[in-house]
Each structure stands twice: as C-alpha cells, then as structure tokens.
Image 1 (tube, rainbow, N blue to C red):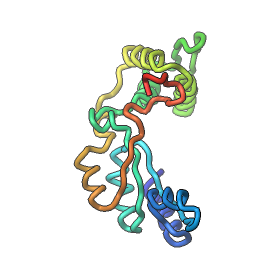
Image 2 (cartoon, rainbow, N blue to C red):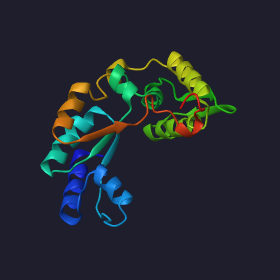
Image 3 (cartoon, rainbow, N blue to C red):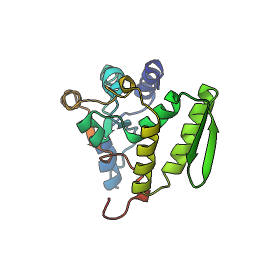
Length: 190
C-alpha cells in the first residue's frame, strides 16, 4: 500500500471507528458480558517499510497496531522465499521461461504484467506443494536465474527496529519462522 493511501486509511479509521489493540479485540471476544466494538490494525511479515513508512503514520494517529513477523527473515535479514520467486520472474533475462510444475509449463514474459502473472501462477502452485517440493523448486529457480542481491537486501525490519516500535506501543506476534503455506505442513513441520 503506498504511504499516502495508508495514511488516508489510518486517518479514516481514526475519524470513524474506535481503533483498539488486537489484545482488546481478543478480550472482547472472550468476555461476552462486555462486548467490544472496534477496529484492530494488523500488518504481516515485517518488511522494512512497516518501520520506515507505516510506523510514523501509526504514531501520528495513535493507532495500536500489531505486526506479525516472519521471524526467520528478521533473524537472517534475507527476503522470504516468495519474494525471491517474484524477483526471479522480474529479473529473468529471456522472454520465455519453461518450468516443470505438475507438468511442463511455458510462460511468455514479454511485459511486466505477464511476468507478474507468471509469478502469481507459480506461487499458486507452490502454495499447494509439500514443503520439501516447494524448497526444491525454489532452489532450482534460484540456480537458474541470478537474483539481483541489491533488491533482496534490506527488505526486512531489524530487531532494533522491532524494539523501537514495541517501546512506542506497537505489538508483535509470530507469523511463522519461514512463512510456509501452513495448510501443507506435516505435524512434525508444524
């Protein structure tokens, strides 16, 4: 969401609704005698722009948001696997890419829109695959396509930024370690 749009959304929420913390929403659900009405703001993954762009707006409007972090990416500083898939399709030097999904597929990559559509179709397939197969496909894709490292670095928040936001009243939760499709995990993987 562009910062100007996010700012407009937060201003609208603040002016028209009671904005409450996620903890207040949970308490309201659990306490049937005292139901709570309001809106809670949550943000997923922990991208750096949550700190650089959203955080100042949240402070401006005193919005008690909760950010769910993909902790492995915060720990490593590495972009999540799905970002790498989208970047691979963006960076691929040719106009045609052949990959094996359930069957061999050929994607025409002649425009930005066709690259985005191909990445979306690959992601849709990957989200239905077991973890090992998803990881194998991603490793093969990265081996075939040189990812521009400058576009991968600095995408995620740091622990120092998380602490600063937490000290300012933003709450945090876990959004898994590596952001896998949870519905495809085995019991041991969960």
